[in-house]
Amino acid sequence: MAATSKDPHNARELARVVLLGARIARREARGKKVKALENRVDRIREQAQKREDAKRQK
Image (cartoon, rainbow, N blue to C red; front, side):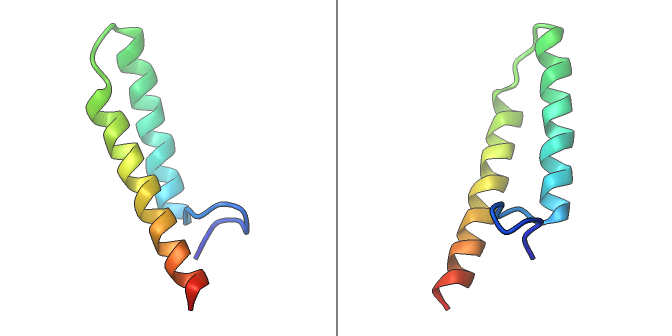
């Protein structure tokens, strides 16, 4: 179930994305690479969108 009517993410996915965002910010501040974490966020978003699109097509 989506957290809001305009957002495809559920509560668990939102929490994961926020946590990863915090990790990305910390790593960037230290000058470390963040591409892998950004890829994880992208995968979460894509999966959420696919799931919601499939629900809307039914």
